[in-house]
Image 1 (tube, rainbow, N blue to C red):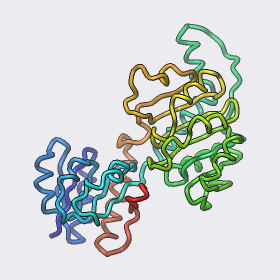
Image 2 (cartoon, rainbow, N blue to C red):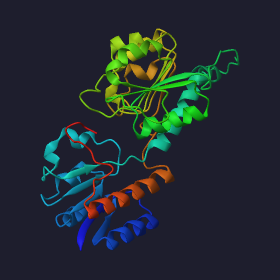
Image 3 (spheres, rainbow, N blue to C red):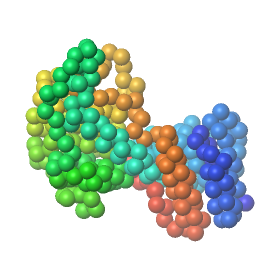
Image 4 (cartoon, one colour):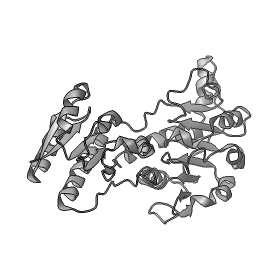
Amino acid sequence: MRNICVYQEFLTELHKAQIRETAERLGFAPHFFALDRFEEAKTCLQNCEVLYAHSPDLLRAAPVSLKWYCCSYAGVDPYCKDPSLFANPDCLLTNSNCYGVTIAEHVVMVLLMLLRRMPEYEAVVRNRGWSSQLPIRSIRDNEFTILGTGDIGSNVAERLRLLGAAKITGLSRSGQAREGFDEALPISRLDETLPQTRNLIMALPSTPETRHILNRARIALLPPGAYVVNVGRGTAIQQEPLAEALNAGRLGGAALDVTEPEPLPPDHPLWGARNILITPHVSGNMTLGYTCDRNVELFCRDLENYAAGRPLNGLVDRARGY
């Protein structure tokens, strides 16, 4: 039997049975370890061909014989930035594109909170006031620009469409047309797109090309009253000018589920910025049952591909970063 080391915190007994059935049918033996059994997992890993986990420390302990590392998270920037994590330079790296549903629901939630002026109403009621005259906006008949048209961006576009969005523009590296978007553009056209962007949703991976892609100059290109939502990586936004634009009233508001660094220091200016919603990187994670089920399903599906010598669906280009 070919060995698989499974080092996860979210697996139920049903998940383990699903992995076990798939693996054994294909000639693999899975070995399961919770996160408090690191040393045992490390010992087992020395004789494993496949690792299903999210642990740079455990990966660093893997032998050169490891052929496939399946990361259960979507963000794989730690593994792409540090090639020394892989004893085998040809080790396959995959990530899990299973977070689109939960992150898209988070985006809809914070968008509605911004459009309906909840940060301002929260301040009113905190001071025991009673005001109900702030003009609000709707997703219906509104326009949205989404940076990143992968699993997350596509799920966001689908939900915005169902809620009556008038136009959804997607920007990606290739600019390739994607279902659910009225217009698809290469990210090289970002500067000409921002002045018409009422609502900017960012779902980008962390790469050298995306670092501070929304910088001071581009924040200034956004029209007055625009909203910014970031559920990708905190490195994508230059945060100080964002706080300045919010406090000056140039932007309508922002919702950040990711920051740079994380956690955000207590004295960071973003904490006190006007009309901002900050959440501690909770839009994804393994806290929704559907996400966990889908994660295991995708691993089992790619294990089928791996055993048959077919390309893996979640394959990451480590040089490109996603």
